[in-house]
Image (cartoon, rainbow over all chains, first blue to last red; front, side):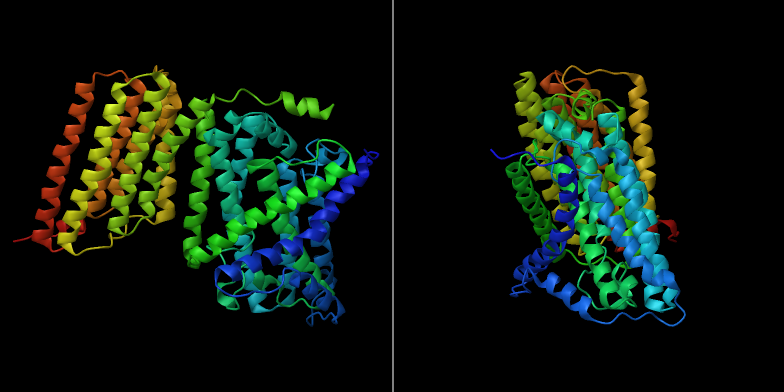
Length: 320
Length: 230
């Protein structure tokens, strides 16, 4: 049919899709969650209105905070805008900048963003923000080995750790899907995602009790457009992690194989459907489990670590 | 050019049968790990029943894929025994004791899991070095089976109550039957059934032990045994 889209345009489109769709994904999770609890819940578009409202407000910085406090949201959002360049968001074929970094590279950029936000929280001198950033870094260090073992599994399965390669391998045959190493790694990654996006059983997403907060507490002192950027950033981080789980591990189907606009548009729809599907699962988990006590989070991380390590073991024995 | 590269690096995955069989074996191992987490004794028995049914499912898979009809009979027998009868007996014993919650283990849960991972790794790689190749199942399943046995030992050592320890022992038997399935799937049926009846003896012994211990110490915890009674 119509002419092909230029490759750079598709690459930009990947970033734009993530940036524009992520608040909507958060909104639909909130909606599903509310429906499961018997409430009507906010509109799916509510996060967009929230962001627009925040952008109209004035931005304040705590006394004594340096320029870094205001620069951090910008750096964080830039990081989140970089990652969609590296992962298969819309296309099954690798885009030129997709080889800039592997899964570990993407992980480093994500952790850079979280590090910058944590440092900004330390700048404020506010106890809750500092507690949040300290906790986020502690639990981040606990889940890090899980991520590493998931990457090892990918590397052992594909011989490389490029996300495109794993997606191609999973697509190649049914025996790649049913092999235990792949399923164990996907399950471990899902548990990491629950913990990284601040979901139950690690953290209540909508809670207002500061003592239970981990990720959310870091943003307390930010206001106005900067706060809006951080909100957008955490929504983007959630969608990026969903995309890595969906498009690389669980369901790398429905991606555009050509550069035709119709295929790319279809890929966007498929992406949103997959993200909504994962979101529904997350919402169901949110409603069916209790939040773990802070000191029990290590048990959750130990469970994820078990899955990831077993994946590597079965691969080493040659049968995974 | 990149796309061709990407397609080529995918190394040989095991066949769907091998992958599926290994997956069920790994599920058996994961259920064994789940027993560490379970604090309610009733739920622990339920996990044991789930684990036994996973072993039976694997038996049926092997029977279907390798055309060994007597394994269907074995699967049915062990399902009747290990999924229905043994858990029922355990539940009955538990009902008599009025205890619901297992005592906490000797180690914290996260450390126990890490310890068990190390022990399971030892089992995995020790068996991997042996190079035993069964006719019916891949050797990964054998490694998993040995890991189940070792992790069951960890469960029995770490937990300080009689019920967890007996469930640990029964699940150890699950690991052994998994190993038997890998090494000797064509074992004469009469032998396999004889092993099952060994389990029955163990159930009777443990049932008596739980009753007796509860009668003397008024609790299921083995920590009471450290104090001398005059």
